[in-house]
Image 1: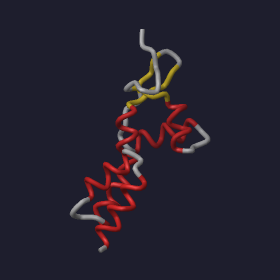
Image 2 (image 1 turned 120 degrees about the vertical axis):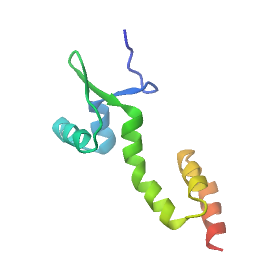
Image 3 (image 1 turned 135 degrees about the horizontal axis):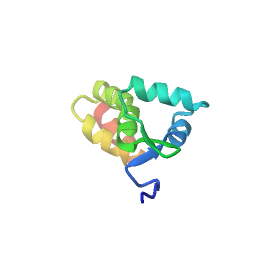
Image 4 (image 1 turned 180 degrees about the vertical axis):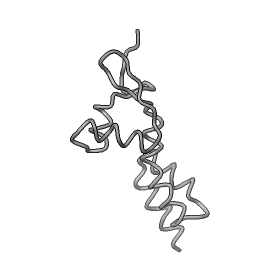
Length: 97
């Protein structure tokens, strides 16, 4: 039996709704379909892949980092993923110097 914890591969659409700050589950379903993210039905639960949701959410920051830091965007993205605000600030100052 699957146990759906936050660290697992699947995420309930209710959680995606909160993550995207949507009020209605139908909006999340439309968003998943638009982003081509599969919806999995398990009993009464509607689930999807946490990884694919995170990828879609990160596409915007990756696009921004590629345009702002073309030579070091991967380093900047890793700092973002690590939530290293000091490292990000220092690296962005190095890039602008």
